[in-house]
Image (cartoon, rainbow, N blue to C red; front, side):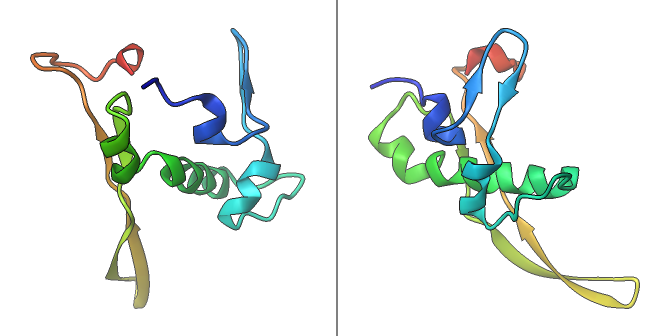
Amino acid sequence: MSEPTLTEVFGTNSTQDINSLNISKLDLANTGLIALEENTAESLFVAIIKLAANYLKTANQELDPDIQVTISDPQEVKVFRNDLTYNQYIYNVLLDVVSPELNVDPNLF
């Protein structure tokens, strides 16, 4: 098969050139993000993880061995901090590189 495309992972409105990667907030709306003039960095980061996880999942990797990055479904745990209880969601990001590669080099993916 082939490497996942930019639009498969980041949405139909995503683009890139030599200097920039553009991910549309319109595509991030599918994650529950409400687009504001200035969203927080954390809200955008979470939306990007959720968006990428829609495509980069184990089930798709089993169908397409060219997918080398997978994001697990979130695991929920309770965390107690500062006298408050939080629901903490753990996403595992798995990066498959052919052995004996010793580094995580973004150019390998």
